[in-house]
Structure formats: C-alpha cells, structure tokens
Figure 1 (cartoon, rainbow, N blue to C red):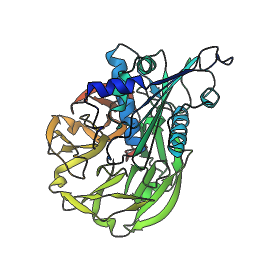
Figure 2 (cartoon, rainbow, N blue to C red; figure 1 turned 30 degrees about the vertical axis):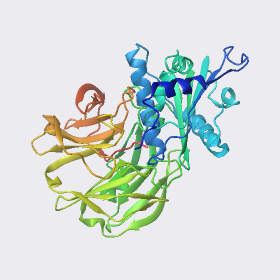
Figure 3 (cartoon, rainbow, N blue to C red; figure 1 turned 90 degrees about the horizontal axis):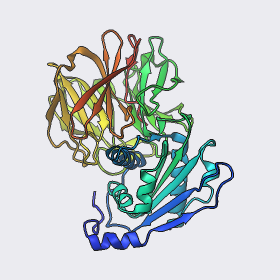
Length: 426
C-alpha cells in the first residue's frame, strides 16, 4: 500500500481541513433532529494497490471503534442495512467522480432513528481516512457522537477512492446487526444442513440461517469472501469427486451453486478463505496438501482462481488453522495456527502473498476440537476467534491488536456433532 504522500506534512493536513464541506439539512419531521453530514476531500494520493471493499470497510470500522473506546464512548454496531446505504452512496460518488452528500439519507436508512449523520471522504488511503476525520472537529463529532449503529461504504475507480460513513441512533437492535462486518460462522449439522450463524455485533449470535442441504458429502468447506466480485460473500467446497465447487452468495445471504472450479483437489486436507492475502484487491484461498505444503490460490475476480503457488512447508503439524483477518493491525490479513502441542502461532501476512514469519501467541489450545475465525464477533472493531470444547461449548477469544488473545465468555453450547467449517465471514 502506498499511502497519501502528503499525510505526514502538517501544513498540507491543515489545508485539507480548510476544505472540509459542512452542510446541515432542515429539521426532519420523522425524527425531529438535524441530520448532520460532513465531507473531507484531498487530491487523490499516489497510485496504491486496490483493496477489497470488505478489507477497507473492516479497517475503517476497527479504527472508528478504537477511537470511540479510547474516548470512553460505547462501541458502534455495524449494520448491514446501513452498510448498503453507505456502499450505494460511495458508488454514486465514484460514478460521478466527485464527493458529495446523500440527499436522501434520512429516507434510505431504516426507520425509527432519533439521530443520524454522515461522513464522506475522497482520496485518502483506507488506513488513513479515519485519522483524517479525527483531525477535523466536525467529522470527529460524528465519530464520537451519541449513536448506536454505523454503516460503511467504499468505492475505488481508477485509483480514486470514496468513503461514506452513516451513523444513526436506534432504541434497540436492528435486523442485520453484526452481519455487515462479516461476523458469522458456517456449520454443517449431522444431517448435512449448512447453516450460517451470524453474530449480532455485540458478542452474541443472531438467528441462524439455513443456506443449503446435502452438505454432508462435502469434505472441505470454507467461506472465501467475495471472489465473484458481486459484493456478496461466497463459499467453496470440495465434493466427493475431488472437485472444487463455487457456491456464489446472494444478496439475501443464500447460496447458488456455480461452476466447478477445477478437479484434482483430493490431495488437499485444508481449505481456508484468507481475504486479500496478495494485496491486489481480490479475495484469495489457501490450501494445505497431505504432505504439509501450504499453497496460495490468488483470486482473479469473476469467481476464478490463479494457479497454486507454494508459500510454506511443514504445515502438517498444525492441527487447526484459521484466518481471522488483520490481527496485528498493520492493514494486512494474517493467519493463526495451532500445533500438536497446543501452542498457538501467529503468521503475519506481508500483503504480497507471503508471511513475515511466526510468533507464539498462546498455549494450552489443545483442549479445543475446533477453532474458527468469525470476524469481529465482539463488536470491538478487532478480529476474534471462537473455540469449541469437547463438551460442545463455544468460547470467545478477542484479539489485542498486537497479535495476542484474551479469553472471553462462553457464547454457545450444544455444538457437539456440528462440523464448524468457517470462516463464515463475508
């Protein structure tokens, strides 16, 4: 990632602050509050590697809640409906080639809100845009405002980047809470039914969703993010003939069987959606063969994968591998793995399809028979792990942004007999 070349020059930062647009709408009868919308623009930065929308928005969500937490504010719940509004408006700005505010924001967000606001920005790299908003009093007031929910949108076209944050205050939970941040787990029941268990964005599960039947014959299954390029999370699975099959996600959270992606996958004993591991803006897949070699299959977009590239050896000693996302807060997706001795290891990604090395970040994990990465399950803006005991209890482990993990509460029971195949993150 090439950052904004002017980002470290105070005089330029002050200049950008002077260009902040601030508009207040008229008082809305629906909620009897002023809808505050603020924009921040900078000339587009030097060309940078494109990132997926999920990568960019997850980082913005994490940075936003980290800022709120450090200022004693309650964490915002990310909501799929607000996400859709924000994403749509970012796309509009992209298509127009100019930054502006959504004139229909009040009508498009879910009803029942008592306060709402919008931040927009143009040109910043995704890992710097929240810092830019913090540096502007009006935008910072929205970041720290008395809101309960947030939606985030990102669009990049020809190197020009547009961002939208939609804030709103609601009296309780909303449909779509937690699902927007990719907080979910995939699990196959003993009778072969595939379920998605969405998190509610606050450390609990929402209502599970049946998304398929007949999955008992699939020996390997994993969520891979959006590899088709349509904005929906997808799933790949290996069937009984050793073929890799794509199941494209739908806007309602369901799956549609796609074309066979390729034969010859019978030699693999692990599939893992790892996010944008190569830094090219597309979701990628990791696979481990029976010899213990780790292979990277880079996403090409439109549901295609590039040929495998070996990126590791000796992974046969790992009894569990998960891809929680950016664990060490460097903007690149990482991998964690448990060895036969129960030690947990962090493998930070370089952002170019390779690992930086490894470091031990835990021990005693041999008591778990499954470890999966649900995304940001706790709602603190950082990736989490879920681990299942032999008795079927599901425990939450939250990350510290430096690669280590904190034990949390039990968040589920009765999971014995289910094949937790994760990640379910979208």
